[in-house]
Image 1: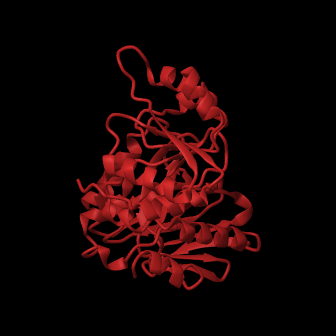
Image 2 (image 1 turned 90 degrees about the vertical axis):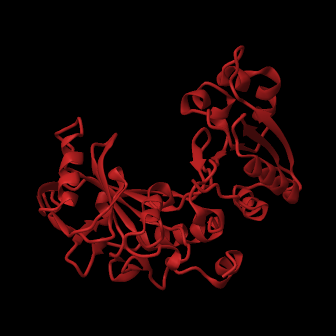
Length: 340
């Protein structure tokens, strides 16, 4: 596993996006296994911003649980006065947040990244700008279309979609904003959706961390997968994944889709079957890629990522062949921050 070292400059930019100024007070939460470079660079980044901060180790021990450490009188008082909480630890659960003063705090959570591009391409100023462009486009969009030259064709009415942006900037107290992240998530409730999805070599079955080797066709009728066409092991993986989902009633239902906002060099991957591609999914979805999700309201049965499709808002091109269209490309300032 590659352990990336996020620079203090990148961290400083991110904390500033989270509202940190020289007048802020920040609480930095660590534990005994936090990456030393991540902690050190986070502290340097806060010093660069000129703010006041304290570091708290919340590792549980034989006498105290993590919750008890967070509820400690001194720690509790400091957390209560913080403008931002930066969580580098591995033990701060949603349950602990719920039962502590953290339930009212803005929190950014930063795990040690293990995928090398994110050590230098987490320019969330660019991610924020793209998320804002998406929101602006949506205000005047009637339909969103995901399509490809290979035959994929899905069209969603904007009236049938709800969406949320994940940019690594906390906007609600008590809810951890994970960073790095960069995607917009759309949820759909379309029982009338008829469509076709064609998975091509180089696309990804997220659940299985598997790169597709042969074309597979998923036919959608009434918002559900009704047939998977393909004789390859790829088709079998899809079928097994869907059949293993406990909620059989909703296993085949189109749940929604995510669109990636993160930018890093397209030539990072050595080719369509580079195994590193499976890491560029989830909340850190590569810009230009689209992930389709299936399942119930509370769980996903299947996630598949299209790496060469187009995305259109009405007639406005957002993604082209798995990359940013002109409306979404990074500007010269973002490229400069990445050393490009």
